[in-house]
Every structure is written in C-alpha cells, then in structure tokens.
Image 1: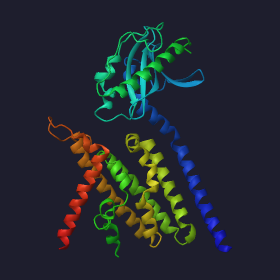
Image 2 (image 1 turned 120 degrees about the horizontal axis):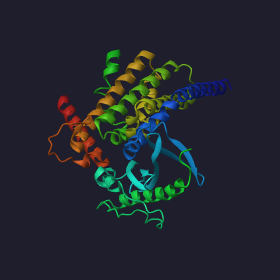
Image 3 (image 1 turned 60 degrees about the vertical axis):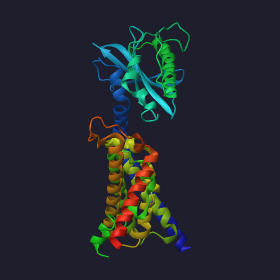
Image 4 (image 1 turned 30 degrees about the vertical axis):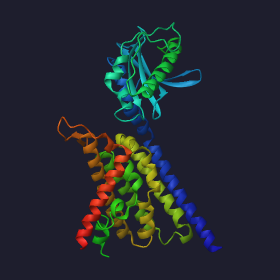
Length: 191
Length: 198
C-alpha cells in the first residue's frame, strides 16, 4: 500500500510541475511565435505580391469573414489609400497541399502576382511551380468578373511539363482565390 | 570510469548513430543539409543533458515501477520546451526540422541514457554523459548533413562550395540518399576500427 501511494504521489508531482513549467513557457513565447509565423511563412510572399505598397503589410493585416470562413487579409496601401489585397488559399498538389498567396490590384481587377507560401512537391520537379519563371506568368493578368468560374483569368497559363499535378494544384488554389475575390469586392474594404 | 572517459565515450566508442546504431530516424530524416543536422543535434544535446541531470537527481525519489513513465514525462517536457523556443527564436530551423522536434521524445538515445546511465550515476557524471553523447550525435548528424548537402545541392551551410558548372546530385538530399550515405559511412567506420584492432 505504501509503495502504491508513493508511486501515485511521485508521478502526480512530476506531471504537475512539468505542466506548470510548460504552460508558463508557452505563455511567455506565444506572442513571439505568432509574429514569427507571420513574418516567416506569409511575410515574404505578401511582400512580393504587394510590391510598391507604402504601409507595414504585416501590421495592417485583418481578419474578415466570408460565408462563415475566416480569411486573413493583407492590404497594400499607397498614400494611405488601399490599392491591393492579398490572401492565401490552398490547392491539392502532388505531395500535399500547396498554399498560394494571390495578390489583387483592386482598382483595375488584375492579379498583381502569386507566391507559393508552402508546399510539399518533389524537389527539382514539382517544386518548379514555386520559382519565379512560373509564378511571374500570373503577374498583371486581367480578371473577368463576369466569366464562369474557372474561366475568370483573361489569359491561359501554361503548366510546367512533368509537373502537371503541381501546376493543377496552383490553378485550384487560384480558382478558389478568385471566387473569394468576387465576394470580397462586394464588401467595403476601407473599414 | 573517470569523468573524462564518461564524456569522451560518446565521441567514438559509443558514437550514437554509427557505433550504437541508435536514433536512426532523425539521423536519416533531418540530414538534408549541414544546418538542419546541426540544429537537430543541438536540440538533442539540450534535451539529453537536461533530462539526464533531472533523472539522476530524482533517481532516489522515483519508484522503480513507474520510472519509465516518469522519465517520459521529464523528456517530453524538455522537448516541448525546445519546440517552443526554436519556434520563437530560430524559426527557419524549426521549419526545416518540422515533426522531428516533437519526435525527439521517442528518440531511443535519450530514454536509453536515462535508463542505462542517469538512473544509476551521480548528477555531474550524468550531465557529462548527456553532453558527450549529445555532442557525438550532433557531430555525426552535421557530417552526414554536410556530405549530403555538398553532393546534393553543391553548398555547405548554404554557401556555394562546388564549381559553377557542378550539376547537383539531387538524389542525395532525397530519402534514399540518406540510407546510402549512412551505409557508406558505417562501412568506412567499421573497416577503420577493424584495422585498428588487428
């Protein structure tokens, strides 16, 4: 009996102390971790697609709700006026989800560009969709707001040979992004 | 055993991935580059040394029947500590190590040292044992990562080292390359210690 009590007491004590220490440390680092994720994961992509903005893109982020779905919206401003927005959507690639940051010029209904935020494609093959020669094909393309879903881009973009699945994943993400864009456009973005 | 030999045995005689052939999962998975190998090694040194110290100082308090459970709680806590700290301060390393940081919990080197060494020896000896084995593990991972990175990417710690027309041997940074590279290193080390013995 004495041995059993000792076992319980020691285990409970160790677990409790570890739990307290960890939750304390988590509290301490929570804010830094959130910032690090924004800066390192989405930051570089956002900066590229919203190039030319004069505001602090990470600080000016906001969350909006569309059809019950929460979207983290980044907004680029020139002379205090919003000119472009960017947000992330995902598509299915060959190795897993491809997260794509798509930027929109809201005055002219154009793509400012796309950047791949994260992916699990095969290095050297599917990973080519993350490289500039491919992503730049999307810069400056007009959006047809009236066209049917899937045909909203004014120009056809070639896929990368040997990386069909990866290219399709990127299109899928952009397709979802475009549908959201139409809904976001109806909202008042200056708020 | 003197304290010095407790510390240095992890460098060659009980070099974890090559001599003990323990901890192969992270050894194969995170050695895509010298940097990730080093990062993983440093995380393991921290967890190993800290858990060894704590296990050894609690060795007379923990009842034998629940010792493994207690060690696991202690190890897991230090691993979560490392995970949070790397996420907050070294994000790029955290990202490249990914799931393998939480998996340090089940790294058999750490539980193995807690059971085989720290639960039977004093605090100072246990700390040295943890540091020594951890350092050996780090060195092995860094060397393996460096070989794979130089052949697979033509870089070393991110800096270009091969000539400009060098075509990277991408196979080396893929999973099968890890097995082949580890096998060759094991063979070299075994034949080396064989000639040393005879």
